[in-house]
Length: 167
Image 1 (tube, rainbow, N blue to C red):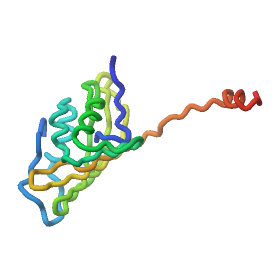
Image 2 (tube, rainbow, N blue to C red):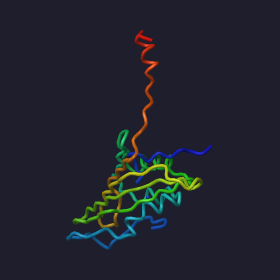
Image 3 (cartoon, one colour):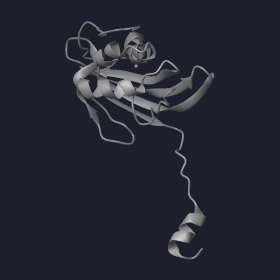
Image 4 (tube, rainbow, N blue to C red):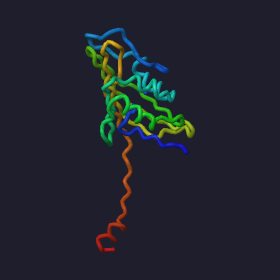
């Protein structure tokens, strides 16, 4: 049975099986993250390579879902991502901005999740990645995603009228 992937508020949001992305040291001036760093999460995730994706996270990293508690540490992140990965969807990100200040980098952009079988987008939104470089390459430190699509809520007036005795 095919799984429905919901990236809303996750992460979710994933080079080609990079175990670690290095820049060769920390920066002391503002600059942008290299494209290889920005694309590493998306590439590892879309390759359905859980180990490579989890390796991009720092030891004390967190995913901050839109609806739910923070996912903390590599073990928790691994379990969370395992439930998100599926070859029937692709996860695409486009960084709108990134900047580096010393050992911290912020990447902000927008994402979309595409059902590759149907050729249609199933979700779109914005994301923020906070990267940290402690001398061993850039690692994800905090990940936040939120959807631009409002969740639908079904309300039944008939049911409410029956419960309060007016119907």
